[in-house]
Image (cartoon, rainbow, N blue to C red):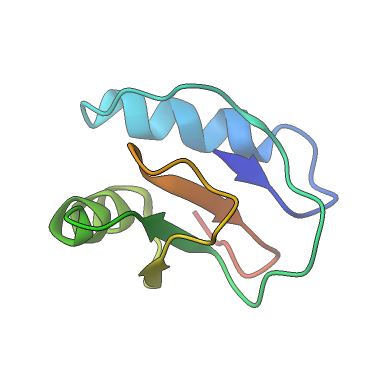
Length: 84
């Protein structure tokens, strides 16, 4: 779970929400770089899981994982559009 905003604690807050929905969260940190909107990124074969996680935490956007992301898990990047 990554925070791409100046809002302190956002990644941790959303991690708690994901855990309450039954997801395992590896960690919460900041993401540096430009992301268009809050997104759940998924590796090959995990598109349906990404859609479910997105629904559970209130994100409407899912996309293929970026090249530098781990290929065995979903990656969430939260941006200023995240309403929670």
